[in-house]
Amino acid sequence: MIRVLVVDDSALVRRLVTTSLGLDPEVEVVGIAENGQVALERIEALQPDAVTLDIEMPVLDGLGALAEIRRRHPRLPVIMFSTLTEKGATKTLEALSLGASDFVTKPSNTTSMEASMTSVREQLIPKIKALTAVRRLAAAAAPRVAVSKPTTVRPEVLLVGCSTGGPDALSRVLEDLPAALPVPVLVVQHMPPLFTAMFAERLDRVSPLSVREATDGDVPRAGEVLVAPGGLHLRVTRSAGMVRAVLDDGPAENFCKPAVDTLFRSAAEVYGGAAAALILTGMGQDGLVGCQLLAGKGARILVQDEATSVVWGMPGAVATAGLAHDVLPLESIAGKLVGLLT
Image 1: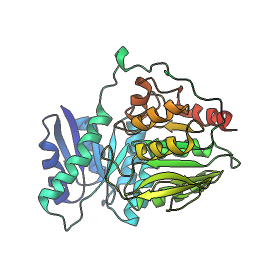
Image 2: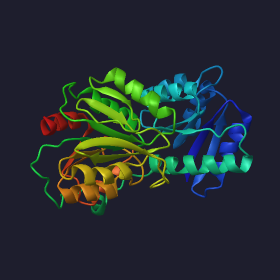
Image 3: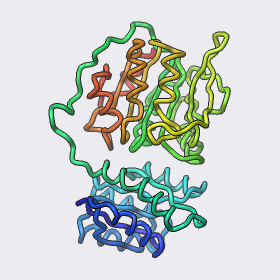
Image 4: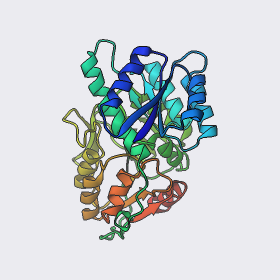
């Protein structure tokens, strides 16, 4: 059983989350707390496997509680419960920078109880299971040597896909890339609408590169990072020798929108082997099919290693499929990219 502590100042939300989690036979809610101070006490008493943490609470709010949780329990999975508002997005991104493992968005007040439970269950349970999963040590899960060799052509673009743990990992990579990077960077981070625009603004403040949310028709330029907007897929097309970004409102792929595979698949057609793809920490396997297509064209594939990933789902899927040419700790990725791209 995965033992979860639910922290929220709203009795209604506590009941909603507790009931939703209780429907899964592998999850047990071992306690509840109405503020961050009580949460800290109950973490010590109950020793849960994971915590869901509201942001806005009296006595001690979620950000204050998170900072203390990280001091006492650096590896305890903490999933923030956020409102889908500008203020909620700002606080959530701050929580991720403080070490929150991931976040889910609260259902709106107008949503029925049944729909709210479904939303919470579909968002929260997979993340709890992914974050608390025992690391697999079987040989079958070890990275395999890449089955194809990349082309010697210098990449014309850097493609990045990430999910759980991605905001912090991506920030650390972009901080160490030079402003004069000679290629554009296209990013898919699994996030809802509104959050991606604020995430891009936050990245722009810490990176020497220019970072912004992508808009339809953008021309990717060297030294610029375009982040796929939440709720839309990002693709690339080439016409009359000019590459442009296209925003696509098509169906979700891998339960994601934006999806890494959508971007990577289009990039395989547009750039062929003249691309480098990076898969950072994230749950699931979004990006695997795209990496297969890119590797088949001769593109260079890099993934974050298991030891430094919050969840080794997306990078692990690529590595264990034998598609990764480089499996690197987070702190080595930027240096490797600089050598490859410049």
